[in-house]
Amino acid sequence: ARHSAANATNEGATSGLAIGGSERSHSSGFSSSNKPSRSKLNRSLSDSDRPHTLNWFAIYKLPIGRGRLIGGNMPDWADRLLAGWEIGSLGVGTSGPVMTLSSGLATGPTGNNTRGNFSGDRSVGEVRRADNGVFFFSDAIISQLRDPRLVPGPGEIGTAGRNTFRGPRFFSTDLSLLKRFRIRGERTFITFRFEAYNLLNHPNFGTPGLNLQTPQSIGQITGTVGNPRFMQLALRLDF
Image 1 (cartoon, rainbow, N blue to C red):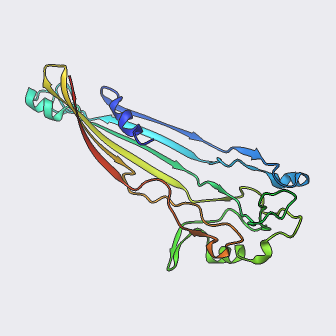
Image 2 (image 1 turned 90 degrees about the vertical axis):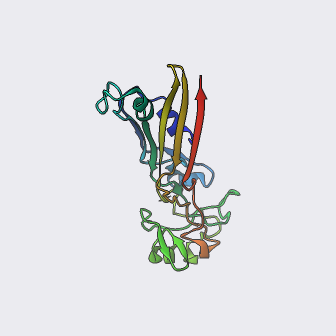
Image 3 (image 1 turned 90 degrees about the horizontal axis):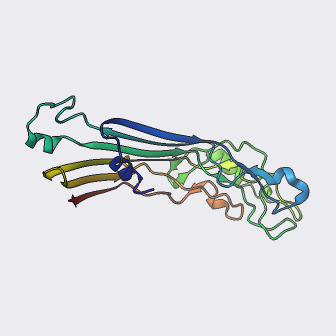
């Protein structure tokens, strides 16, 4: 979420370092939208499957100011300026989403588009830049996937299976910097906050084309997901 890093920092520990994270793995599902007699091809990873998802956060309050490691005996004016700075980071890294090679035609017994006939390796794909765009598969794999013979015949549902390919990975990390300046006594503060979302400005690419009816777009990536780096500053008076 856009405000998670800032909120985590604002709710950080009174001193020191706080770290947390989580990880999750596979999920699977079953689709009966095509030929029931070919149940093996209908069983697959779920649409939301990400075999590896890592979420993390870290909050660090700099050990500067009265009674702390650095500047423990500094004067009051310096303590007001230099003490209490907090740095927070929050990020996520996930495996890519699942993808299906679509025939683009309703060749099966239902009105749904079926899958292509493909028995090659599906554990392939890395984002790469070429003279004519950004692609996910190698030229050799793209050539195989553009073969018109992969389109199933009438009454067939295709052999590629559902959700058997996996798209580009996703990674993003945010940073926040927070400081509360004492103005008067112990109750009046000005809170300064700096936030940077997608701090590294890391591009996260969308899924490539995988429709046999548009062979020229197979393997090509035409968009991104998430946002580019975004930074903002805020001041708030607390009394």
